[in-house]
Every structure is written in C-alpha cells, then in structure tokens.
Image (tube, rainbow, N blue to C red):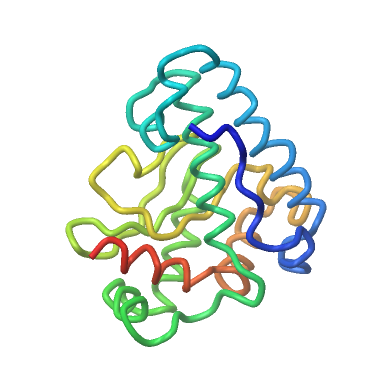
Length: 195
C-alpha cells in the first residue's frame, strides 16, 4: 500500500471561519498522519504491506484495523468538506437522495441528532444501503467500508475534530458542518460510482 497520507483537497485556512486553520493543522498533521505512521510501523516487513488501504481495513483487526480505518475515514472526511459548501443539496441525484430522507431540513436535523447521540468518539455517515440513503453512526474507527453499505459522506465527531473551534459544543460544530461545509459534489461522485 502507499504509506502516504493524501494532501488535503484545499489549503488549511480554506474552511475558515467555519473550521479554523489550527484545527486543520492539528487534525491533519498530528492525528491523520499519526495514524498512518502507526500503521506503517505495524505493517513493516509484513505481507499485508502490499495490500491496498481498503484491503487492509477490510481484512485486519485490533491496532492494525484501528489505524488503517482511521487513515481511510479521515481521507474520506476531508473530501466530505469544501469551502463554501453546506446548505441544501442541488437538484438531481443527490437532491433526490436527500428528498428520500425527508428533505434538507429533516436530513440536517437527523444528521445533527445522530452526531450528538454518538456517545464518545466516532463518525456520522450518509450511506447507500440497499439502494436507499441512510444515516448511520459508527464508534471509534469503525467504518461502513467493512459492510455492504456504500459510504457517501461523513462527519468526524471525535473531540479533536471540533474542540479548538467549539470547545465541548459538538452541536455547534455539527450545525456549522451542515450549513457551511458539506461537499455535495463528493456525494454526487460517490453516488455515481455506486451505480
């Protein structure tokens, strides 16, 4: 596998003021790259090192899984955000998908509720499940990549994702993500690839 963390799809200050550059600096440079360093050390000289990251996530357990899944989840997370994003999705396939979940306002409320109700650390996901959109949460490093669901969008609800910008107010963070950062283009790309 390629033991490098992909570059962020935007500058570290591009999401400000919704998400500050200091948050991106710590989250990407320390947490995301830290998971990769631990994964590289764990797989050095082992046959698994020749697998893709997705294969490692799907076939590993314990510390290898935790680090591999966190690398994959974080890369997906950065792509789930974009400067000037958020708000209701555009018309088309993505708009239809969100309409199937009750429309933008219901989706927004359900996304925020799901994120707030994920106890401790984890993730909120929009997945394609049985051909329909569904909001799920996973604890810790767990990911829908290990299931039959197709991940379309995520939000990281580990404290390091929001503590510098919002302290302990996860709800405020989730509101900002929904209103100013969600990358509907990324959802459309993932939806098209799933068809």
